[in-house]
Amino acid sequence: MLIVLSPAKSLDYETPPRVKTHTMPRFIDRSATLIERLRKLAPQDVASLMDISDKLAVLNVTRYGDWSPEFTAANSKQAVLAFNGDVYDGLDAKTLSTDDLAFAQKHIRILSGLYGVLRPMDWMQPYRLEMGTRLDNAAGRDLYAFWGDDVTRLLNKDMADLKHEGAPTLVNLASEEYFKVVRPKVLDARVITPVFEDWKGGRYKIISFHAKRARGTMARYAVTYRVTDPAQLKRFKEDGYAFDKAASDDARWVFRRRLED
Image (cartoon, rainbow, N blue to C red; front, side, top):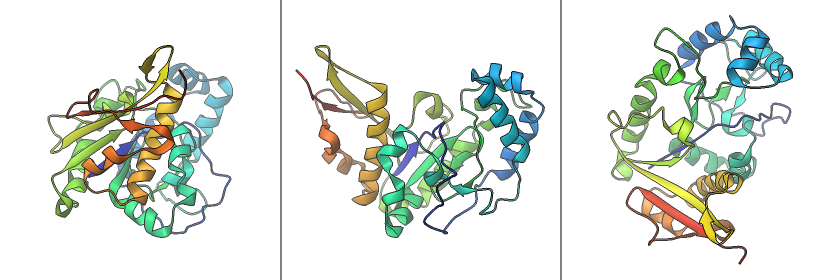
């Protein structure tokens, strides 16, 4: 069983990592190609392309300029410790034990516009490049074209490395924007997508902030309880959520909570 997460827009490179263990991203050459393309953009181009403020555009143009194919402790940080957002608040990787992080390294992958696929302990230099960005490149008009089958094939390889645990299963805890880079016709696995709904206004609905955090919390649950059989995820009851069999099907597992009437 392999879990995929989305990255986060917010990054934390100020807090020193509490572990030195790290691995290298596996698509550095591809990332360098994207950086070369991004370096041709002026701040105003980046602001328009990514729909961000001028201040953020200048920051990211600087990041593209600083990016190096040589990853070091001075310019990089482990991905799971560098991302800082709702999903990663739920995952709370900074409090995971060394053994927890070792399990996560085998069972969690982070999809990335710049890096393709990251393992939790992969060193990562700061960037902003969302998967849905329409950055024209030699392969096409966007990052989905750029990554092609590569991301999916690497996920297949990672799941093959876990074949001793059972039939290949990809647990999709990523957003639609990011999971779109995974190509169903190339993927050699069953896909399960957990969905988190909260009761509000007289019905159950997906509330983005809560759903994002719950994805991270489920990833943490899988790590701390060493979940290798997806059926075990149905026992997830963190933060008041519970599996709703009637609302679910084989591919879409619905978890609901009701905090108000």
